[in-house]
Length: 226
Length: 144
Image 1 (cartoon, rainbow over the protein chains, first blue to last red):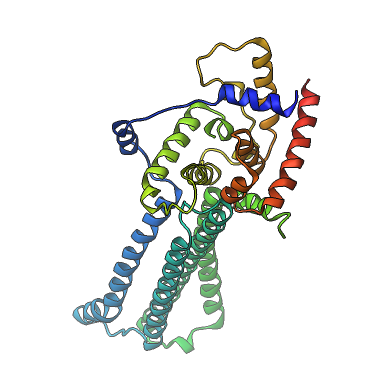
Image 2: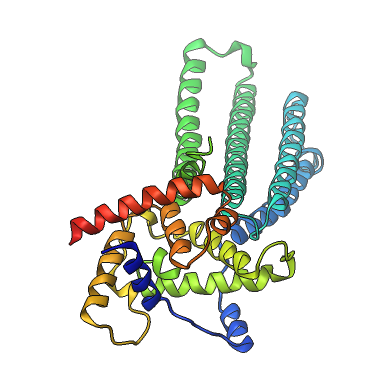
C-alpha cells in the first residue's frame, strides 16, 4: 500500500463530531480534574497546611509547652538549643516552600496550553520536577522533625529518669548509655527510614513513569535540532 | 487524534472530553497569531501527548486495536477495510511524536504548519517525515 492510499484510508475513518454549547457544558460539568489541575490544588492545600502547622508548632514551642510544664509544676525546661533548631527549621521550610511556589507559578505562566508541543512538554516537565523537589523537601523536613522530636524526647526522658535516681546525665554508666543510644537509633532509623522509603516509592510509582514518558517524547523532538 | 492515541473506547471518550475542555477553557487566551485550526491542533496534541493515565505504566507502548478505527458507521469495501487494518497496525508501532507528525500529514497539513504545531523546525519535520514514511512502508510491507 502506498502513502496516498494511506491518506485515503485515513479520510474514511476520520469522524466529524459536532457538539452544541449545551452538550459541551454538560461534558465539562462531569469532567474530573486533570494532572496539572490536581497538582495546582495540592500545592494550594499544601501551602495552607504548612502555614497552619508551622503556626501550631511555634505556639507549641513558645506558648503551650512552657505553660503546660509550668502548670504541672515540672521543673524541666525546654532547652534553648532545641528552640533555636526548631525556629531555624521552620524559617528554612517556609522560605524554601515560598521559593518553590514562586518558581512553580513562574513555570506555569511561562507557557499555556496554546504553546507548541515542545514548549508545553518543557513546561510540564519543569513543573513536575519542581513538584517532585517540593515533595522531597516536605518529606526530608518531616523526617528531620520526627528525628529531632524523638531525640529530644529521649534525652529529656533520660534526664528525668536519671534525676529521679538522684544522678545527673554525665553520671550514667557507659554500658547503659550505649544500650539506650543503640536502641534509640534502631527505632529512629526504622521509623524515619520506613516512612521516607514508603513515601518515595509512592511518589515514584505515581509520577515516575509519567515524567520519564514526557522526557522521552521531548528528547525525540530535540533529536535532530540539537 | 483520540483514535490515534487511545486504545480503548473509554480512554478515547476521556481524551475527547479533555480536549474539548481544554479548547473551551483556553479559547479566551487564543491570540489569533495563527490559524484557528493550527491552534486547535496544538491544544489537542498537547492534551493527547501529556495525558496522564494512572492505570497504565507505559501508555505509548500499547498497540492500537482495530476497534479504534471503526468510529463511523459506514460500510467499507474489502480493500478499504484491509487498508484500515494495515494502517492501524503500522501506526500502532510509532512513537508519540511520530504519531503526531503522521496524523498532521494525514490531515493534509503543510510542513510549515506541522512545525508550528509541534515546535520543531520545518527541516526537522521533513527529516522526521521521511523517516516515518520509510518506517511505515517497511511496516506495511511486512504486514502485507
